[in-house]
Image (cartoon, rainbow, N blue to C red):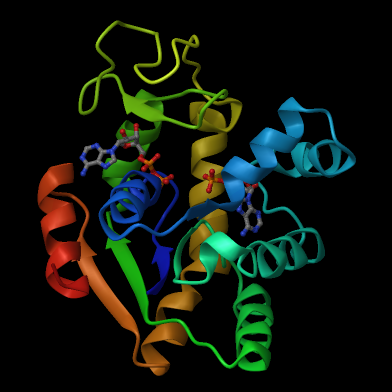
Length: 214
Ligand code: ADP
Ligand code: AMP
């Protein structure tokens, strides 16, 4: 099963992608997580990506596409995968389609987690991230057992630099300009499914399971 998660930053793509990965036994591939791991490890890619991420801008397509095309050909992705945060532009979607065509493969579902901008600001302001293991929390809706500490690995949780209020509005503008057109793109390919992302996270997941099957 090959799945793409669509939706604004903070809509809950990562939260749902992790649940999908666990239930269906496929890898969760998040370009944001890959970039953050590279930043943490001080790689060249990380240094380049950081300058864009800190400003709420997209990392250029040429730094993003090959990385994903390579990742989806790893052995653990043979049975499928859930892509979270990629593609984010029409050229990225075209690059993915070209690569999949060559591999004789295709995307099965593009799931749009639909959340209006008003809710996003609240979601991102309350998000707390573990930069060690990639777990995500919310101070109200998905609080860790111990405040400020990751349940999975014990690392201190942080407010991501790009979740600060001054950057959130910029990221929403970038989303509407560059990423939202993908909704029509995947609708045109008959793989678009939309879920109401304003509901409680377990209810959002129920909608997704109805689409993907038990
Ligand atoms: P994205 O991957 O789309 O950027 P996340 O999955 O990281 O978004 O979710 C953003 C924030 O909102 C996180 O703090 C997460 O815990 C919280 N969240 C996710 N889904 C819901 C939901 N359905 N209701 C309330 N909060 C949610
Ligand atoms: P995310 O974790 O998905 O919210 O991504 C955080 C940031 O990483 C984004 O605001 C972008 O700067 C960058 N990023 C992640 N995925 C992509 C992508 N597919 N294309 C361009 N930039 C990306």
